[in-house]
Length: 196
Image 1 (tube, one colour):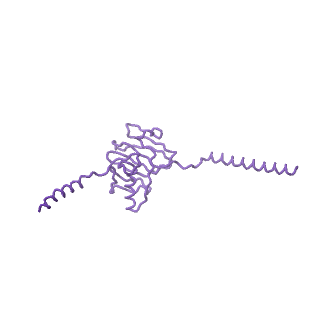
Image 2 (image 1 turned 30 degrees about the vertical axis):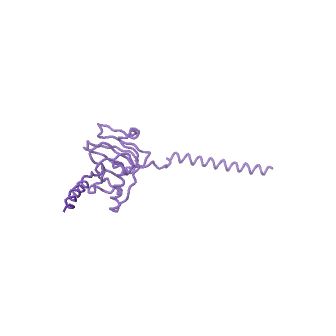
Image 3 (image 1 turned 90 degrees about the vertical axis):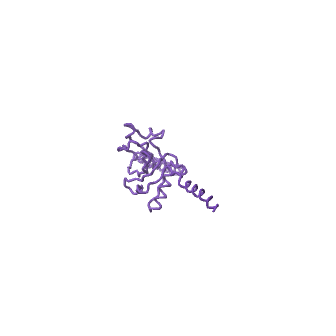
């Protein structure tokens, strides 16, 4: 009987400890998640925050959000994602890539030197991760009534090194000049050998 009296407070304390743990800062909301790799404009909603930190142990990092999404995607048979931070509208370097106007309710971005894959829009206590469906790395944004938007985070990679048409023309002219000089030096060598 004394053991039962001792176990009751311990069991109650253990139960209160297990229920007092707080939820992580960014959790995927399954009922509001559409695969971000399916080519439509729907996104995946998360509670919490997202920032430019890639440490999956930091519950506000994009690394943590990526891990949350990939766990959900694997369980639902959809493609996994790889988030690589480019910039954010609240980053110190964003002025190099875009503008924020109208008291933060709209703006533009120009990341044309990069291949944007995804972007996250943070507002209130949530953020939504979207697939970038544009083709040139530029665009405009508006909050559409979500006046509590705090920032947008862009993910992707450095643009592929595909030369422009003018560069191709210069390369072809250069190769042609090299070929011409090699051919004429061979002829000159052959003429000197005949003369000797």
